[in-house]
Length: 101
Image (cartoon, rainbow, N blue to C red):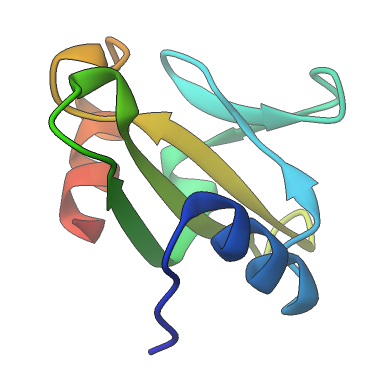
């Protein structure tokens, strides 16, 4: 699997692989295109992910997910903090993201 040295490099690399959507994490789903698509946990898969730790500051910890949805024919990325800054999620969404890790 491809390795990236930082978040920007990962974004650029995944964009070149066709992950063009910018997903936003909601409590019960991910969404894109200003809410036009709301994709629930059973409608997407996490193809790969990359975690980045920059120094010891918890605010600099992030993870990028490469996500695809066969149902909607979409591929994109989701960037989220992890650790103490992780967003509250439903059990289904939390399980989906933890399985990838």
